[in-house]
Length: 480
Ligand code: TXE
Image (cartoon, rainbow, N blue to C red; front, top):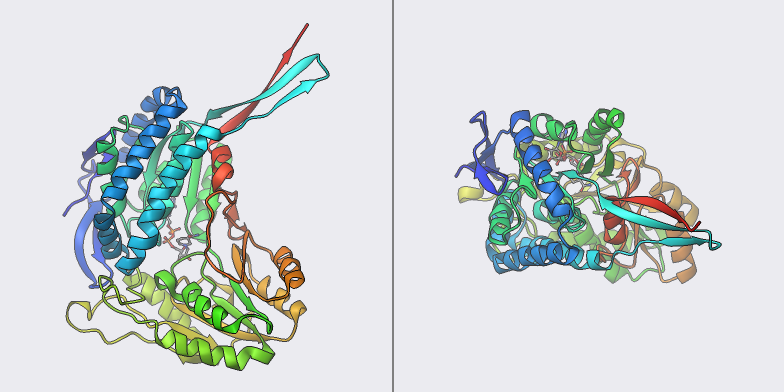
């Protein structure tokens, strides 16, 4: 099957006629092709979005809201089809796509289609001589670039607020997982989203992505992906003074104190380590355990990891599917080998499962737990982004904080303790954007999402998104 770009409300082939093979991670086989778009395709898409902007920006908020709610309803009606497509395209278990990815994509549209109806703006009375009010306008054509780990979830997280606030959009989904973004074009057509309001251009980052981030008619960029890529994008857009939000990688600590509920910490830590094959920027990939409970935790955690089955993503009983690509699997395996060379102990995993039939060449990896590494080594400093976690003991709160903050990233963290004072004290001292206490991945869409240090710039989520996708202008009206 050849996918097509979705431009100006129509599915169109890439101008160059070039395509990229799209592999199914579970089998390692090509099962479709996506356009290898170039700057020429991006130019056509940006022109369509620019043409559509004035009418969409001046469409009444209630009408924009109703249109996005139709998209949500139509997407929800095709949930099973989208879940199957996401699972086949990304390698994740279908139950995960069915219960998280696609429902969250529906929520993204519904949340922002209703939140925008209540967006407040300020006014200030200057002692009766003048009135200042803040007038918010959409920015224009939004360039939305999304990654391969939660393809539809993270793309709609951008499309929702961008369109709700009156912007138009050109989206560049990851070339590794184009399928659900392609199908979303069908939903937008059926929802009668006006032509050009949302456009999808498929292709590689350096070709299609760079053409979008560097386009003179795209004043706003929202990017989710790797820190290395964000450095390239930042250099490109800095001299163009574009408004940007960069949501990047993480190397998140999961800190377990001796007074934690160990049973709950173990059960949740298996999820925060291996959900979506560990391919979630919020995964807790560095587990730190207070030494008095370290041995007990490690034994229980290994036993729980053994039950985290790997196999056919379409099997509802399988916990983990395939990693997204051969290249990504090799990258993750490289870190496991490095851990061995550095003297780490592979407590469980570190190898590929022996699967038969059509899965024998799939990009599978057993969930892997490594102990005994120096916290300053590359395995514990760099984002691996796979089902590989380290477990390290610590003496006290001071050492735990030093270990947790001792990386260039600062996205998220989990803290397990029954001491409320310590929970507040420790959470407030962590260098990151999101902290979970005695839980993980409970996400309220109204909260700010994003990281600090090498995990990104800016916040999206709730009113933070509505603010990001609009420009506030202060207008001062004098009386006399
Ligand atoms: O990201 P990339 P990938 C991290 C994780 C992962 C690494 C690479 O560590 O191993 O990033 O993943 C587009 N100009 N995260 O390959 O390469 C690209 O086509 C414009 C964390 O997915 O950054 C894709 O659509 N665009 C992250 C998107 O950028 C460019 C989730 C992301 O690709 C471009 C995913 C360029 N020069 C990965 N180069 C999170 N925080 O959730 C690439 N792209």
